[in-house]
Image (cartoon, rainbow, N blue to C red; front, top):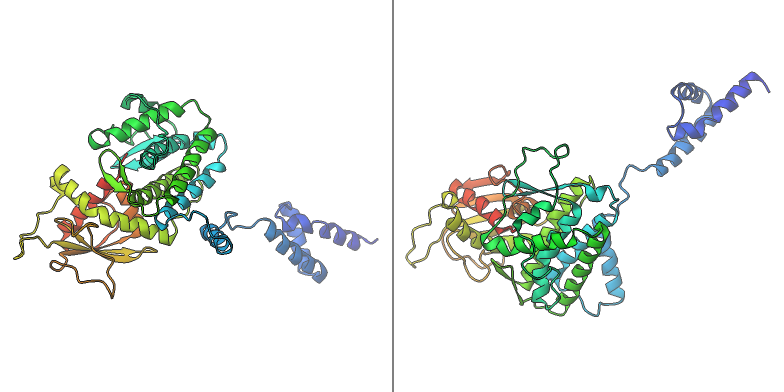
Amino acid sequence: MSSTEEQHDALRSLLGAWALGACPTRDAADLERHLRTCPECAEEAARLRDAAGWLSLDEPLDQPGSLRQQVIDWCLARRPAELPVPAWGMPYTAETAKLDALLRDLGPEEWQEVAELPWHGGTERLRPAEVLGRLTAVDGFLALALGLPDPVPAGPGATAAAAERRVPPQDQAVPAALPRVPPQGGPYGAIAARTARMLAEQGALAPQSVRSRWRRQTHDLVRSAALAPQGNTPVDYGGTVLPLRDAFVDRALECYVHGEDVARAVAYPYDPPAPQHLRQMVELVVRLLPRALAGLRAERPEHAGAPAAPDHGGRTARRLRLVIDGPAAGEWLVPLDGDDGPDGANGPDGPDAAPPSGGEPVASMVLDGLELCQLAAAHRDPDRLPVGEHGDRAAVREVLHALPLLSRP
């Protein structure tokens, strides 16, 4: 064998390593010069490089969020569910399944990561298992309404001070300048006390055990919801009462928000809610907005605008047109000085919508649907949120500052 043939064979033997990007720099340069003059090796190199690309795809391995719903729809088309989940229970079903998929992949070190939960300008820091404890405690209000066992231990339990056991100071991992969320009393007292007892009770459990208990409860809640498809059962949170159908959407929103908090802490991608589920969350927030506006006037009058003068019918007519962008796009007329019926806001507007009572809107506000939900969860600063506005700026500011009041600890 001549030296030229030996050199050819030696360079050809490098093709596999070169295709995988594992060839030493000097050898790779020699091989690439050879490929420019050897069609046979160049053809083989192209085949190997193409095959190597399939071994190291840049696309994420996670399946698209729509795949789960496609599989469920296909299965239900072949065999309908004996107890179908009501439409208002589907967002909760999807968001709890998505969070569980994230938690199932966490390793021991990731369970020790600290998630930062923004809330009303402060930041609460919890590990993933403690986030589950919070979700479990508040979901317990739905369990009680449905006649299921209360997951929270009975008795006086832990006080607000016990909640400080959640995460010790993280001097290196978390900047000390971030403020803590102060203990919440008043209407939030019952929720804060339940959460403290829940965290104290699960403190000795392994994280995966906490996850299993939370997941069992979510399954029980969904099965029970299927037996109450009208969703009229009242759910008493201690400071507010919602019908079961609204409480499930409310819990789906909190599950998404805190799931995203955990995903951010462990550097894991996390999809937003499906468009049809996000639409239900947006509609709930908009319907509850008049209640939040009333709370704003009672608690923070400095942020509340002046009510309009009564019209000839003796009622006020100040309204704001809320335009939602994104997958949950729509328009609503929000009464600023009182509810317009059992659901509060009118809408969404459309060609067949009845003309709303009252005068023309005093302002218009354009906001992304996800950002609306994050603001309603007190995860955004109302003074820094990108918003399109037209008309009475005081009315827009009033709505922005009212939305975080819908959030609970």
